[in-house]
Image (cartoon, rainbow, N blue to C red; front, side, top):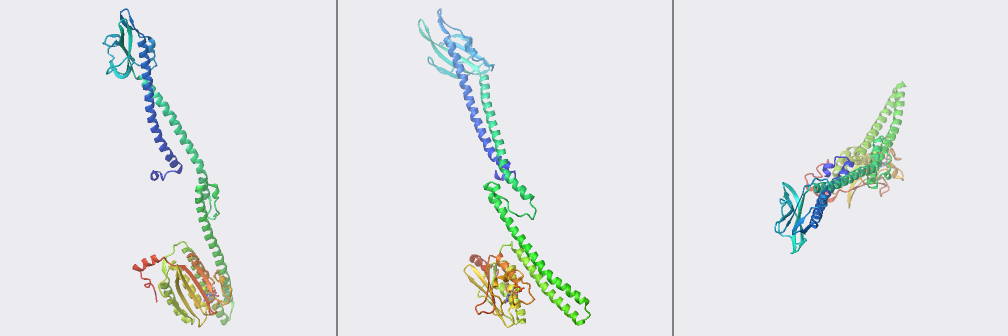
Length: 481
Ligand SMILES: Nc1ncnc2c1ncn2[C@@H]1O[C@H](COP(=O)(O)OP(=O)(O)O)[C@@H](O)[C@H]1O
Ligand SMILES: [Mg+2]
């Protein structure tokens, strides 16, 4: 039934769920009341037959040497109930001498004792009848002699009564069922009203209306649904807010260098001096370079936001770190930075690979950009319990500030920064760590020099790792080193 009804309306489905069993019960009850009506009609008919048999028997007398019987009208009036029943009677002595009545009315099977009566089906002139036989002793001068009184009637009025009894029951019960259906329909409609109102409210919302719905306006069973909708909208609100803040910040950050470049270009157009022209163009060139870097970082940040909805994957940190470090070594050499990797074994963590690459690239690029010449840096991967720690630590000149935590805010740069950065790198790292349910820690390394960033990520479950390593994909295969 649920499958059959699943596509109909809730109201109709609920109604059917209630009404189909009730209709079944109604059918059962009608069947029972049909039996009861039949029994009642039979009983009344038999009482009528017996009463008139007794009335006839009372009138049987011994008179002037023989037994005589008069059938009084009262005995037959009982059958005059509008059912047009045929009535037949027969009074005779036990030795078969007919006193009065119709000899065609058959006798019951078997003997009957004095004052006893018996009902039996009889057929009289092609009519089917129910008859009663009643035996009564009559006093005669020679002693008492038994007389048999038989009376039968067709079943028209009995059947009519049976139908009437049954039909009135049927009408009453059907009316009750119909009334029940109407009440249920009204009840369901009333109860559905808050839900339909909620539906209207949801439909009427514009895309920017994300405030929560009132969960108390609906039945408590449906409150979890409203709360789920509300929490979904809260997440949307969060995303929308984040994007708005991001766009505001991005617009602000791009406006300034664009204004500066416009001035520089205007100056270059005006100047007649070859040397000044060259200087202005050089300035524009370096501004363009840093702007394009910033734009790339902004795009990276937007991409990270988009990946938020995707579930994490199992990734071998060591394999990806090897690749990133190998790719960065030439640039590190250019900047006289010694870059190394310390990872004893494959370390599987739960993160999307694209996010991991973004994260590692930002940290390695920071070392190359900010640690300074002669610095050495190490990318370390260690596993402890259900977490994998990935740290990048250098002994360079450090960001030159005590409170490192502000460096994870967007567009925040340290005191040591050159004009080449955008201030987005560490905020991208923080965002990625947040997406992966990890934790981020910026610190001054033990030696007092340099800068350290530690990222803790959830380790991949051991059984998953075991399955992966017995599979065809070797963790080292993707390593570029
Ligand atoms: N390895 C590092 N050594 C010294 N300072 C660093 C290092 N990494 C990051 N920083 C400081 O943190 C700041 C923020 O870094 P980031 O968000 O990547 O921005 P950006 O690199 O564009 O300046 C940098 O401007 C720099 O001052
Ligand atoms: Mg950076």
